[in-house]
Length: 152
Image (cartoon, rainbow, N blue to C red):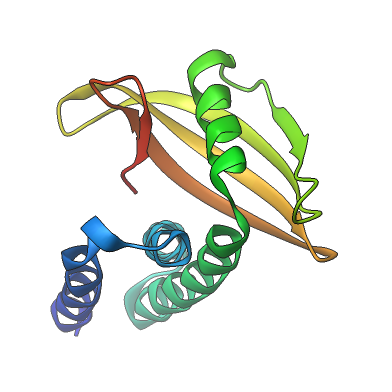
């Protein structure tokens, strides 16, 4: 059962990753949130309960990430990249988007290595969008051009 469920998740996210070149910000948030939610869900329970926690985490994360992603504009992404580049681990960055009315808080959680890239950070984003607070967890890595790319 666990292998079957894992295969479905890999297939689901593999199909979504196939379109990354033209991925919208909402799709990127959906994918990132789903991955983060699945990882968080995998830490809960055991046996069939763990499988259900992974499924619930994946779905919840995808929906939340999609919502945050669709509301972030270029200015928000620039501010997020600046926080990942400049803020110390644990030091939050705050901003409000005057165009959307959304408020954001990004905190670099820890420095990590991801697939050989030594310049990666786990982060936590809290967004207040239309009066609803949402959270997203992820990992971003610095690219050769200095930009940051969400990798999970």
